[in-house]
Length: 258
Image (cartoon, rainbow, N blue to C red; front, side, top):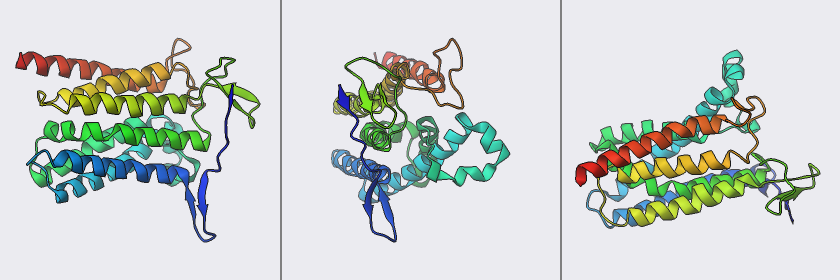
């Protein structure tokens, strides 16, 4: 069984400022999206460098603001109601993918208004840029030693000295499935002309499925626990509409093209 390496969450300590690995993972996520977007833009006359830079900027704001607000609303609402200023207490962690996802959707609405672009044209362009960033984010969770999976004796587990137990490294599972595998699926699929909305729909379907599955081995947030049946988590509850909507959109758009 592999032992958790317990990496120092501080990547660089300059005395007057500390650089955290988690922050570096966010930086890598945005850089990956930027370079991939420029690569895709070279194959399209609909995008230029200024639009790419603005799209990344809008998206970054949507991820950070939406991710934090989503965490407070979906996972820590009582604290947020009793102390609204706790939303700024980011030193304690707390970001939600689903909140960040909604934040990006809103950010892209504003971006489209600026450049007079169609919502799904933009989202089909953006969708393949997202998974690698998700993967980097999960690696950040792993380095921070947070969002662990359940205790296990399986060889798939990882022994954590600080806890004295072995757990599923659910962060790495998510980095693999939601990051690398989802990236490959969307990148290959979008490499050929597809009906409008198809790429966005595929993102919804596979992210939702991967997240839903991994939640079975991931420990739910302690303040929420299981919502029902001793297995349903908030992550699954939020992912289920993504799967349903994705299947509906994929079926509808491809049926119209048939």
